[in-house]
Image (spheres, rainbow, N blue to C red):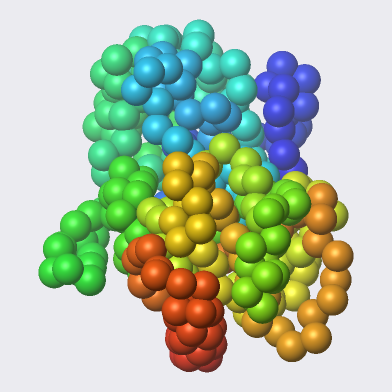
Length: 329
């Protein structure tokens, strides 16, 4: 897959790509449906392939920094997900202020046609672009007739979630689920576990003293699930770019909390206890991808270390049960 970071220099020479533009934060099932349709059209029309255009950082961080959401998917992981979805080229727009403030027709002429030269554009039905988000798919379709590209839209269907809601999948909805610890709903909306990426740092050794040693994660800038205990897998790698790409899946139980049983006012700890027997790899300073599958329980304070140890043993057993039944594409 080609990755384009400088649009003045590194654009592929071929024209006639099938293009899709968006933030793609979380690369959820709505995004996947758009990319699947783009891949179908690219194959049908014998084009150079599918080109996705995304933004780093999020456009809101450029236009209204105080309102910017924390990202779901770091760009390194997003590129991996694009590749898995069959995308042939990804353009990453870094300095997006001028582009985001262009009137819609200027955006089409100078960026979409002037630089990308698409044969077709595929978007969700609610796609908006240009200054003040004043352009939409109807306008894009009309202008496209004169500029020589077709526009296709994908209807975003509603899904049912664990508490009975019926909602169209959106990145904002996934952020809400992550914030509330509703990881099973995140996996339903994306088709995969929620992945938190970071480096392993040295902790206080509390888990080890209880007989359950943990790896402490220092995450990159992305959404952190609600405090609680979760079932999941970890993958170990040597770099951020490789995090979650090549390592084997290792069963684990995660704890996100503040060590309330032992300490008052402690900062949030993100910990992974490896369930694999005789695991001995040194994880310090390595990159860890934590794949959250489901929440086991909320955090609470225990009256003694023995009571906590007994609960952790139950958490480990429950994590193994959940992971044994987890199925993802």
